[in-house]
Image 1 (cartoon, rainbow, N blue to C red):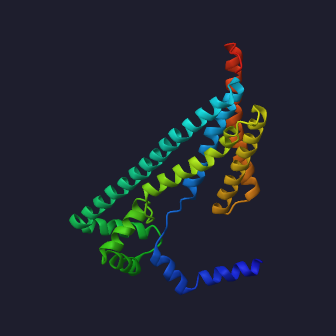
Image 2: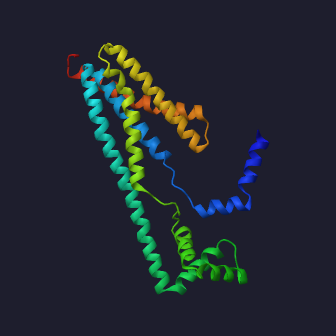
Image 3: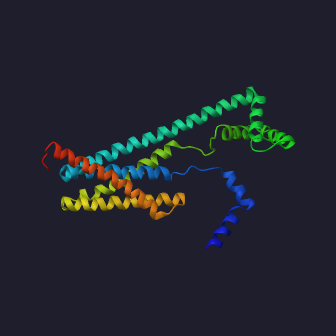
Length: 253
């Protein structure tokens, strides 16, 4: 197994494969947006369910508040993620324009920045000057070097609309799962809550496993961590609602 993995790595690092991979450039992965939306959606709706049960409200209240929060919070989160990505994209564009202007107006100053950058990497003498000349002979390469080395910016293209869309869809689809038992009116409240808790736990665990596959981390531990996070949030909602019900002597519905 280990040998097979090594053979795959050797193949991936063949000059032709490296050339093809680099020519495509970096790609933005949206797993983090899906994980963020899914976890938050499930926590949002199951916390509403837990809070409703803790407060002694009827199933209809949990269903109505759950779906109301699902769409409102899902939209809000998607917009926030979009705006965050758009702000980052605008920031990168402003730095890019600034660097382009500097290259056009004070090229010697920008050449010196390239020289200092590669001097700090261990280049010196004739080799250093050759590196500087090579980089600054192509404005596109020059700009990419300044963005990456001076400002630490990635070449990966940001698409805020896709990030927002992935977040929204994950929020809605995963967040709706804990509400499904409440759609079936023939089940009593205790059964509805038990099934909802089971479904929410399964979603938390599966999302944690999805995250582990993307990050090459142990799947089971990642699933358990996410399950504990979601369970803690739901527990806080339940006990807060229960204590407030007792404090204000609210009769259960």
